Length: 313
Length: 321
Image (tube, rainbow over all chains, first blue to last red):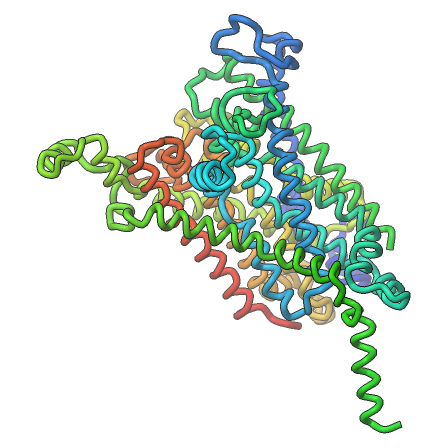
C-alpha cells in the first residue's frame, strides 16, 4: 500500500502527471471516507438481498414450493393464499399493455427529438416529454381510478370494464414509462454516426426513409435496452396497480377484469396486520424476492446491451 | 464565382443534406404527424390529469385543506353542525378533512431525506469522478451496481429500510427516520448520477491549474471542483427530492399510518401526503374523493414548484465554460 494508494490526479483531469510529493495522511483518510460512501451502494444491494432473502427462506420452510409456484391457491388454505403465478401473470398482462403504449409513443417522440427537431426546439421539447416522469405514481393511480376507467373506458369507449382493471392500470402505467423509453432511445438515435444519415440522404432517401431504414436499425440495440429498462420500470411500479389494477388474483386473459400484480400484492398485504414471522407476512418477501430477481435480470440485460452497442461505433 | 451564387449553393446544400426537400409525399406527412402526435400525447394526458383532478377537487380549496387533520373536525362540533345543516355526521367530518399531517410529515421526511442522501451521494460521486481509477474491478462493480440500483423497484427499498429500522432497534413503525431512510436509499442513485454529471462538466483546466499551483487532490476537489459544480448538484438533488416527496410505495413498507398530530422530531410517528392520498383514493365516498383530488393538486404544486426551482437554479447559476 505505498505507491498505488497515493492520491493520483483526479481521474476527470485526464492523464496529468502523478504527484509524488510527501506523504499526506489527511488525503488518504479523506479518500478512504469517500470510497466508503461509494462502497455503500454495493452494501445497499447486499442489504436488499439479505433483507428479502431471510424471510423468503422462512416462507419456503413453512410452505411447499409447489404451492407457491401454482396457478391457484390450494383448497382450504384460509388466510394464506400462497399461489404466486397469478401475481406473475397479472404483472405480465399489465406490463404488456403498458409497453404497447409506451414503446411506439416513446420511440416516435425520440425519433422526432433526434431526427427532426432543431437544436433550439429540442431544448424545450425534451423537458416537456420528461415532465411525465415527475408526476407521482399515486397521482397516476388516482387518475386511472377516477378518470381513465369510468370516463374513458366505460363511457367513451363503452367497454364495460370492472372498477379496477388491468387495462386502465396498464394504459396509465404506459404513459408513466414513456419518458424512460423516449429518453434512452433518443440517446441511441443521437449516437448513430452522421455519415450513415448522409449516405442514405445521398442515395435519394427522404427523412422518413432515413429514420426508419437507416437510423432505427443502426440504433436497434440501444432501443432494445430502452425497452428492457421500461419493462423493468413497469414490472416494479406499485401505486398505479395497487390502486387501479385490482386486488384479486386471476389467471384470466381478459384485461377488463382486475388482476393483482406482484407489487400490488406486496403493497396491499403490507398495509394489513400480519404478525412478523407468520407465513402470510413472509410471503411478502418471497414475492419481493421474485420481483427483485426479475427486475435485476432486466436491468443487467439492459446494461449489457447498452455496453455492447457503445462499442459498435 | 459571385458571392450570391456561392450563398445560393450553400443554401441548397443545407436543404439537400437534411432531406427536407423530399419530405412532401403522403407517407412522410403521415409519419411526421404521427411523430408530432407522440410528442404531445404526454402533454395532453398530463393536462387531462391536472384539469380533471382540479375540477374534482375544486370544492375543497379552502383553509381546512391545510389546517385540519384527516377527518379533522371534532365530533361534538360536527354533531352541532349536522343538526344545523341536516348533513350526516360521518359525511361532515369527511367534508372538513385536511392534509395538515401529510403536508407537515412530507416536509419533515424531505428534510431528513436530504440530510441523509446529499452528503452520502455527493461523497460517493466525488470518489467515483475525482479519485477512482476506472479500470479496477471494484470500481467497475460500483458502476454497474449503481446503474442497477437506479432501476430497483421502490417498494423493495421500503423493505430494506424496514429491516434497517429493525436492526437499529426502533420499536415503533412509521417514524420520520424510517421513512427518510427508505426515501434516501431510493434517491441515492439519482443524487450520485447527477452529481457525477455535474462534476464531469467542470473543465479539466480548473483542476490542472489548481494542481499546478501545488494544491493536493483533495484541496483541488474541495476548493475548486466541488464549488464549481454546486449548481448542477443542487439541480439534481432537488429533482431527486421531488421524486422522494411523491413516492408512497416504500413508505407503506416502513409502516406509515394515519396521523392526527404534527411530527415533532426524527423519531415521532409521521404521515406523508402521498400516503394520505393513497388511503383516501381507495375510499369511494364522494367527499373523500373530492378531498383526495384537492390533495393531489397540493402535491403536484409542491412537486412542480421544486422542479421550477431546479430549472431556475440551472439557468441562473450554471456556468457555461
